[in-house]
Amino acid sequence: MMIKNSLILHMIRFLVSILIASVVLAQTVTSAQMTKALRSVYDQAVAFSKSVESYPDNSREKVMITRMINMLKQDARKLKVLSQNESSPETQSEFRKMAARWKEIRDAVQEMQKEVSKKPIEKPKSPDEIQREIEAYQQRIKALESRLDAMAVPTDRLTERQRVEQAVKEKDWITVRQRLDKALVHYPDDSELHYFLALYQMERKDFPGARDAILEALRLNPRQTRYWELSGKIYISLGLYEQAFGAYAEILLLDPRNTSARIDLAKLMFESGRIDSAETLYREIISLRPDAPEGYEGLGRIEWHKGNDERAKTYYQNAITRNSASPDLYRMLGQIYMDQKQYQYAIRHFEQVVRLDPENTDVRFLLGKAYWHTYDFARATVYWSQVYRQNNRALNITFWLPAAYFVQGEILQNQRLYRESARSMKNALEINPDSYHWMSWGNYWLGKYYQDQDNSPLAEKYYIRALETNPNLTEALNALGIMRWHQNRTREARRYWQRALDIDPSNHEAIAWLKIAGNTP
Image (cartoon, rainbow, N blue to C red; front, side, top):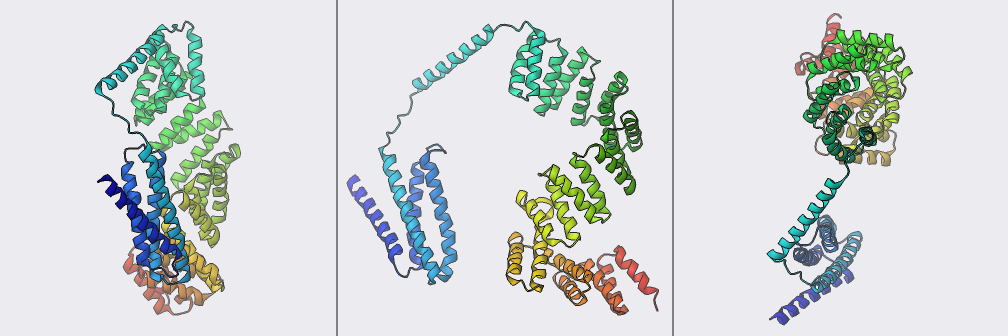
């Protein structure tokens, strides 16, 4: 019976080989023949994969067969596309390449089957053998424990503390944990060891454990400002802001000129809404340390919060002169310029952020928007492409990037650069083929672009296209209304503004223009 089955298996393999060879050598191959050949090889690969299911995931056999099956699946998808034009020379050439690849896969599978069949079958272990292995491991564990117990008790408290401190500086947290376990047993009254334990728990994000450790350190030495500073950070991490206030107040009682504690306390005051108290603290910081950038940064944040943008810019600029390596300062100053529509200044500061913090995706997105507003669509595309590569779900990038590609494509087409235009349009559709809202917005910006170039016909053309794609785009309605107004077609202008108000009753631009139009004869 086994001989008969073996003969049948050899016959099937022979027929598959003949089928693939006929595909490779045939002058004209149909997609039906290709599908049949692919199915035979795929079934053989799947059958082999089932025979090695018990193998480790990183075994040679399992890795190779997984890759082969994935290649065959890709070929199946490719074959579906090629079958639409199976008689073309290009398709026939691709068919022959695929068939040759399948033959290689089939040969490799057969070779692996031979190797697997030669491997000896491991005899399962008996319960007694498993029990003996467990007992051997237990003996090894006991031997290790006895060696640990036999270790000399650390007799030099200072040396042991220094070893832990060195491990903390090197961020070798495994060594910190091991040494602390031993040291705290013998020196439970050492406040520094409890402080190091709190640092270790903070690193593990175990904030309740960190709080317990720092409270023990403070009980043993309440006059150490470092302990109070760490306790303030722990309380903030736990959301216990009143306790954090108390910790920073203790630092200032112990050291009235401690500016770092004032900085932390001022930040906490600002974030909890106590703006006036925060402002007082920041001014105290500047009086104590005129070179401290944190004082000017804090006052800049407060003035920005109050809506005093010009004062905020002055404070941020003062902070940058004292710390030109802080990306946050450039980012905040760039954001103010962005809000004020001073895009060239915003670009200058955002590019500094990218130089200092290359991984900052948010600022790359803002740089793209700043360039977009200056009609430098090519650079906007560069920065948004970088954002898309880092995170294709970030910051609504699947709206802005295709819009930029679309705008570039239209401009290139109007310049008769048709090949470049087609490439740009293709990029837009590949990024977001499911929603065309970006197209209406892109048409609107093309209208603005050509209007700023005094090309009214093209501007009008794109505004109308924007409304064809999205009739509710109030920006395009207002823009067309302004165009008609300057063309002395007042009645049409009013109609566009009224349509914008029907869609958005609080549209300030439409309201303002209707008031102007209503005061004219």
